[in-house]
Length: 84
Image (tube, rainbow, N blue to C red; front, side):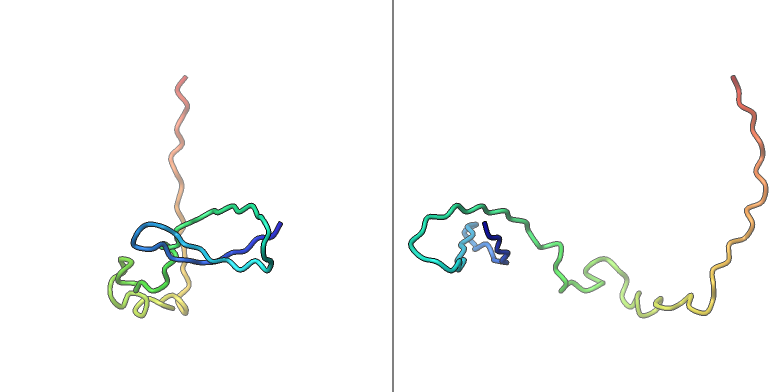
């Protein structure tokens, strides 16, 4: 058994046409098709299209580089007794 991974596009008619070269001729084969839409992995969207304000990353990248984050003491919390 062999696995081949390809990317293809579904046509306007909603039908996926595949041409898969497998290296031999005149043989019967069993074919299994598993499909997954890849729209979410589209790297062509800009940060603005993804909902970020214009210039957000340019304005905030490295902003804490020389200013370490210090967490103040939280203080003591009141003790509560368990009511039975």
